[in-house]
Amino acid sequence: MGYTRRKVLAGLGLAALDAAMPALVKKAAAFASSSPSILNSASASRAAGTDSGTCPFRLAVINDEITQDFEKACQIVSGDFGLHWIELRTMWDKNVTELTEKELEDARKILADHKLQVTDIASPLFKTDWPGAPRSSQSESRDQFHSDVDSSGQDKLLQRCIWLAKFFATDRIRCFDFWRLEDQKPYRLEINAKLQEAAERCAKDNIILLLENEMSCNTATGEESAAVLKAIPSKNFMLNWDPGNAAAIGSTPYPAGYDLLPKGRIGHCHCKDVVRKPDKKYDWAPVGGGIVDWVGQLQALQRDGYHYGLSLETHWRGAGTPEASTRVSMDGLKKTLAKAGISC
Image (cartoon, rainbow, N blue to C red):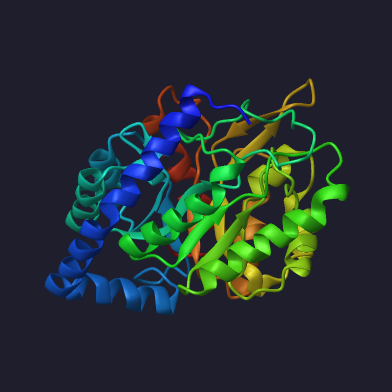
């Protein structure tokens, strides 16, 4: 495989963090000893699985859906939305996996200042072509969120994500299962084996690997998610359930897709909504303004004992800016929770 400028730069970024890790590990230990109350609180909340108060979920927002200014995003999530959780993806126009030592320290300080805990590392792990398969039509046409690590760099990326999870005091890493193929059947067993291998690696550090159903990847619907979970029975391999993504590809996420899922294997949930256009294509919508039955879905999650992250991934930009659109969608999510009889 040839080298492109982007691949070389991505490789340099990985090498830079490798070099910085020993120093960061020492600083992480010092931070833990000097700030036990913060880390103990995070550990207790993770053990309980719930947010503080009466909300049964860890209500959160993916930070870059608001702005690339991480401090401003945290201020809005904590101060304006009144939340205690946030999901990390990109900040300062960099993927979280590409942050420098100083940026990592700055990010952790900002989180502590705003009393925010991290639901998971929303990594781009395995969001690439499956080696040996025909090139996917989705390859390099989808948003990789400031990341460009090809298939040869995924094992190193996984190691980095595990380290980042520890650094940010979370036990969850999000992943995908490679760009969607027209016919994935010839490669599905190998893809499952790769996911199984990654889950086993995460288990050594008590990290949960979350597979997100994504319409541009090989697992997109509830039906496909159920099949992969059945094929990979590892307890620390769970689903990042995204009803909006399932609806975007044309399936019915709730109740049809959700009913097929093993409820104890759902480890994170993304909130967004979808509308169908006259040309039968989809567009995003604020939560509660689309075709996803979020009232029913939220009631089902509560009924089935789900108590992990419920993270707003706005995507919709109808209010003009990411921040304004996220504010509208958060308002929609909170109103939908109220309609479902859930206090958050």
